[in-house]
Amino acid sequence: MDKIAVTCLGSGAALGRQRLWSSLLLDDRILLGLPPTVVQQLYRLGKTPATVEHIFISHLHADHHFGLPFFLLLFCYLHERKEPLYIIGPAGIGQASQQLFDLAWPGLRGAGILPKVPVEYVEVEASGSLSTGSLAFEAVKLKHFDMDAFGYRFAHKGRQIAFTGDTGQCPQLDSLLDGADVVITEFTHVLDVDDPGHLNAVAVTQLTDRLRAQGATILATHLSGEPAPIDGLLICQDGETYFV
Image (cartoon, rainbow, N blue to C red; front, side, top):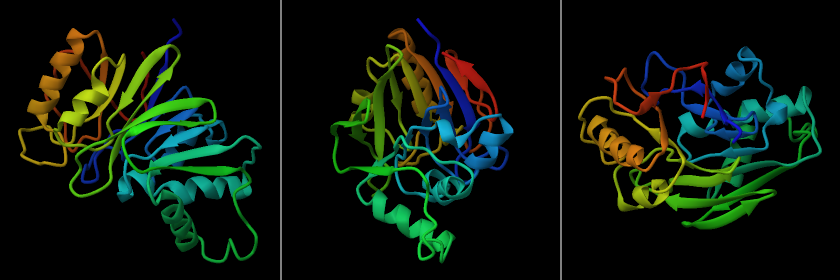
């Protein structure tokens, strides 16, 4: 079975000090999270935005979504493509993204300078099955304060990939992760911090033990500090590529 290349463009949470904001790139085609640090990291690691086909946005917090105007600006001037760029996120992501682009680059739209790639927004309103082009996926609404926040699951190279985005503990998280072959989980609090919108070290340890027993590979991202090692858990490091 072919390996999946998981490139860590960033592994930090919003208040993390030593890591870039969390974003992972799968086989240069599928982007999980789009913070403002993504563009520089792509080029630094010898990647190009031109190969990205799908972008999954879990929710509309800035460290997960505000890289979009920088990403699209590249397609205004440096890249163009006939194949669509699918941007998947909670309901309202299309309007929010266009407003963000116009706020970041006032006057471009009026001058007719727009991304030279068909951009298709896929708005997720509730848990369920959806598809974009050649990629079918499951969206699962998770617990992240009062926001619409989703985890995603899809098949890639014959394996089930599950990505939590930001979430606290909730029954829906188990349904997202159970049976997945590769799990990419948030790990915001490296200590036993009580936060209903994020996972802490105790929750991630329990999650890892359970998923390891099912044969899953587990990667952690969105860290606010440096955690103690957890058996069976791969802690993502900025700039590294993992073959899973």
